[in-house]
Image (cartoon, rainbow, N blue to C red; front, side, top):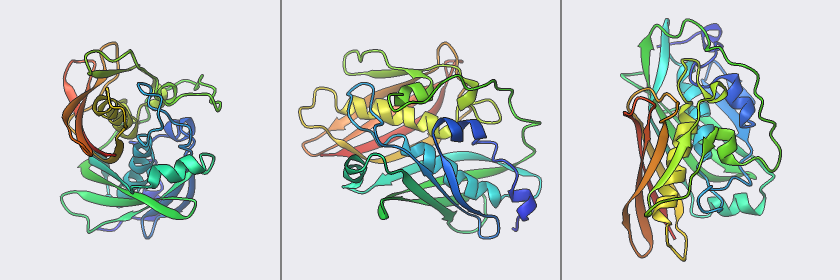
Length: 280
């Protein structure tokens, strides 16, 4: 199924300009014929709010944008796209590269993986200082119709500085963990919503990684590093007074651990689920 450059040039409803601006994502290349997208994002200095340690969770925002745009540009006439799965796989030394040069952004190069079928699949290769540090994928379902127009949003009042935390960028809050369970509240903020009024999938995936990673590292003297993230989007995730991310431990072993997380919407229903794997 082909997509014209004119059609492909429309804005992906899942990643509005406000999200790109909030997280400093800069598009470097975008080919509407080969359906490839290249963009960069600063991730140095991003910390897990529960542990104060560096996190790679925000890479999910970059992957969701790049691979999601690749899928969006391949959609058929009259179709829109909705992400159903997202993954991130990081090399064992990926975070070391970022720590060594935190001012250098991570670059993601997205391209299609396989044909347009029941779903669309795209892969994003993550590089830092010219070295590959990981890959990510986004699987998308093409649907008919789409939003009538963008969700009304005001001006972004958050002034980003080198001291702005990741949770501030996400419009989230992190209360202290209780009994090893980690909970991150998601405040309502139209700036991080997509064009259909739900929390951007990359932002919610980041929240899931933060709470799951914090859960498996609770009480650990030697921290485990997140190596893989797998996210399943079940239903729209609307932010409100009760919206939150919850992280729990599945298993912590001598050299590896597994953690689960879920995003609970303002309606009290689980909207997104994720599993992360960490290694020492």
